[in-house]
Image (tube, rainbow over all chains, first blue to last red; front, side, top):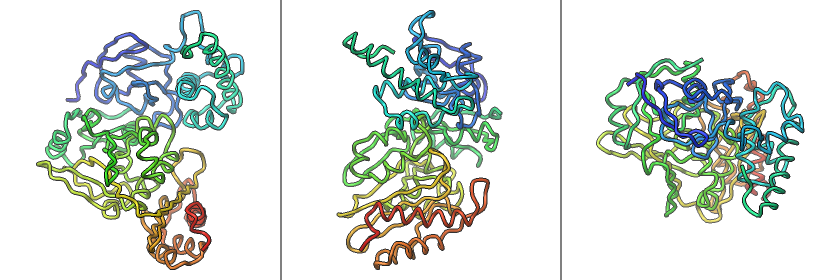
Length: 170
Length: 279
């Protein structure tokens, strides 16, 4: 019962499988089993948010989730944000433009949490942004650039949605 | 760190989970959302021989509002927070959920897991006490026990759940007519566990509940303060009685003296929110 078992997920739209022990954390499964190293390992106790991913469309801390819990689930990691290899997501462009990162360690988790917010709340207040990102710790920026980046991305996504007359692309 | 090895069972039904717990040693643990357990596994503060995953049990994460508001143990905290039934029937619960952790932990964390974990600084035990809630436990042979919250919480991370029982749901009775509520929590940062907190309900006819968290080995009702409140005592006096009934300890977050002061402030603010501060 504690041996390895096959864990199958759909990650960023692609079906993938790899072996994992029951004790393997989802974040280690994503990085080592699936080879997607964009998701970062931070505190391993739910305090920093660096490992944030989407699990079946909901935020999840991949360090506080066992890989076996995600068997059969749909995952989105930071690698799934950009629409094409040479085109960044509006959130990624805004983080760059607004200096929403310095060392970049927290950025994958910040981007996933911010994307989750903007899909639910396209025009968030500053308080809503700070509240939704409260579980994501950044030791470089002091958060000002991050909040500005989310505001800029929200604006750009709304403009984009108005121009295409449909739902904002993500 | 990473978890030590353990055996793992993904239970298909509540009875399967109960059978696995009954057959296992005393150190088997239940995994629901994992937002308390997995950090403990990572830190190796918990080294169970067996983890029983109840996350795939169908029907255990549903909210039903009849005479009684029932939340299945697997109801995610975020799901409860978005639920119109919870907002309408138990706004005190909704308010407390906003103070619990962060968006990502609420998305995975369950209401049953938070109650079963029984952190003395957790919000939900106090909310259950303030709303006269019950905890539903399922044991061998499908036998269910319904325990009032006051009988369930026994100490820090200690509850009346037997090793071969599974917490399957929470029940909140219909509120007395005219019920008003207040909730106040003092914490260093949003999402932190409380340094001190209070959940209160008042209703005409002498109903008064003052449940405190973060200031004793387990959440508890300050019954002398409740009696004073029902008798029309001023808020400062009620708050002082509540603080006197608490038994906080020094830790890295706050001294016992600070917690005692903070809980009095929390009670006064919760009473003000409930409109019970001027009579």
